[in-house]
Length: 180
Ligand SMILES: NC(=O)c1ccc[n+]([C@@H]2O[C@H](COP(=O)([O-])OP(=O)(O)OC[C@H]3O[C@@H](n4cnc5c(N)ncnc54)[C@H](OP(=O)(O)O)[C@@H]3O)[C@@H](O)[C@H]2O)c1
Image (cartoon, rainbow, N blue to C red; front, side, top):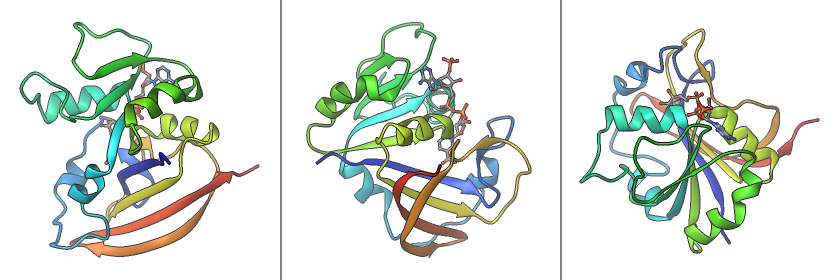
């Protein structure tokens, strides 16, 4: 069965990025040789990707484009109210509640999992629709004071696993449901 997984990194005070969408505070952290969930292992199990517009634009601007394609090879569902300048292979532009696109997302995933790349409000929208099973977060030893929130809502989680990777604390949670 397809699982929805939010694999991300945060500052200790719960921000995905600072208010200028910078990730310098994260990218400057030393990582180690070991992770409880190495990226290569994680991405091998992913069949489709969900992303918000700010994250999508950030990745294009910073990681660049690989052979004219979205940097991720998996089929990508881009949530935005704005169109793209030109169609991109493998990218489907959608809007509105994630639940309305669930069938298409799971068809694209073809039995593998879905990576919710971010941001935090979209991940929360997914969670409220029952489309968030797991959060894997790398916590950087820094506070930012303000920025883009990790998760825009109130949810009960259950600790499943934790470890360290260089300067980062890695934690894996199961999402139990919305907190009323
Ligand atoms: N630390 C990490 O590992 C990590 C991971 C992921 C992201 N990031 C960073 O964190 C920041 C996240 O940015 P963000 O908080 O602005 O979140 P985002 O989800 O990337 O972008 C938010 C935008 O996506 C569109 N959107 C979201 N949900 C939608 C929906 N249901 N229907 C239609 N459009 C929807 C809207 O854009 P429009 O209305 O303008 O179209 C909204 O303003 C970025 O800087 C990103 O690079 C960091």
